[in-house]
Length: 428
Image (tube, rainbow, N blue to C red; front, side):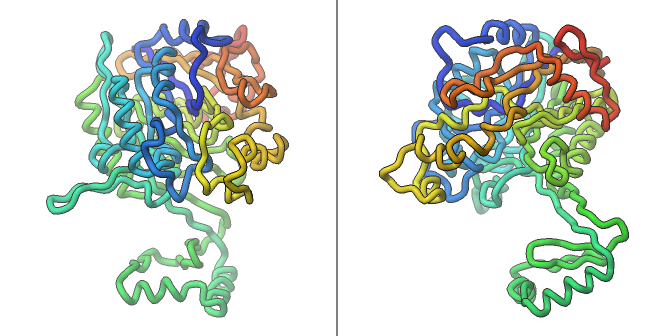
């Protein structure tokens, strides 16, 4: 079985009628595989949902036409559990689901309730059946799907991977935190909520909640993150089901969280989660979210892509934005989208548009036999860094070996070596 995957497709404008630079090369590349995955990083509708009070950063919306364009590239499997899934509340989610199903695309990670959001979805190919399970760790609490009950319907939303952060300090600093909390009364509302039964007190020893942050006594100071056990067990059940119902199981995880301030380094909980998925029976983990490349790990002879960066990135050609966006930048209804984007980027001097790492990535093609990796090739792509915002964002194949060299450096801590030959990478 041959697989191909990309990172985020934040698409906001239609593909030119005759394609664009690099389009033919990419479709030829995708033609080598029956399984073609991308992450859908937008909502799909014609203003069929109300703007949510909280967005994923930009209220992402695109015309249903773009799904046809993604199919033209060749994609047949998509994750849509992201930090943008609920940008237009439940109406936007339900419209996106409607248009995905109209295009007969296999999609996972969100739905009308938790059962649907976490369910494996299946692609039938001539070489076998492939399952996709998708989730995101980057979300607002209100976006999480709800379980059904016999006496109450579930709630539309995403399949979440919660994680817990613990800040480790010495006993001396812990005592200082307790003293500060007592003087400032930072925990007073929470303590009252516990007494009245609205919150549950932590049973972890040697820990202290300071406002929204959990501190723990330890000698090695720092921060640790661990995935929430309830979510892990729910996703584990989905994997165990899928491995009995399909030849191959793919996990897609959308995660912006990082280690420290380095976007290129995955958070500890993401590494933990990804390896556990392989332990449970998944054949590959496809990560995306930070809009840049992260390292590749070959774990138990199965690939983990901690982030594949961007495939299509057009967050600056959104056609409409709600009042909330304009108000954030002290603009009013006399201003337009171009005004708002200029204000956010300080006339193109800050933001994602100025970071060259956002505009380059790789496309992996890998073969598996008997559940084991037998070949993995990496093809660099570039998305037009330096072009005007209405032109950049479309991918084209590149022979820039620097992209592969950087990815090799990011993969080294995971024990992975990328062999670079004639502008292409291989992992043996």
